Image 1: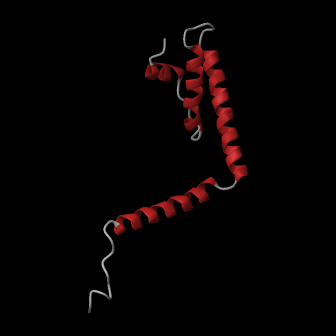
Image 2 (image 1 turned 45 degrees about the horizontal axis):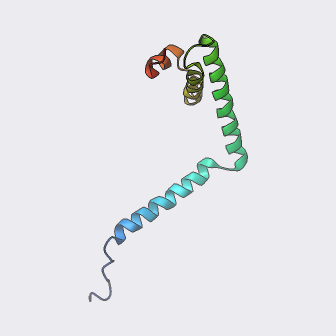
Image 3 (image 1 turned 45 degrees about the vertical axis):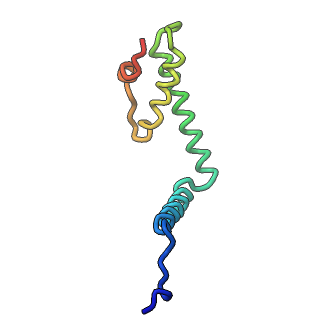
Length: 102
């Protein structure tokens, strides 16, 4: 067996091969998860609706004219998006304590 028959790969080739394999898997999974444009649009519209409803709920839970009310409402709405996937919400008191809002 000669060394010419099985040449050594260049330095770092194994790492480049692993990175390329990982990239291909990531792209393949991304295509399967993201699907088509219609389903992406539906997911984005649903998330936007949940954010808007959460922001409105935040407005109902705060006093008009309170300092930082708009910021709280937007953050509260955003905090409701992920829990809405599993039919749960975060109480406003918990969010306010976490964000140290007045």
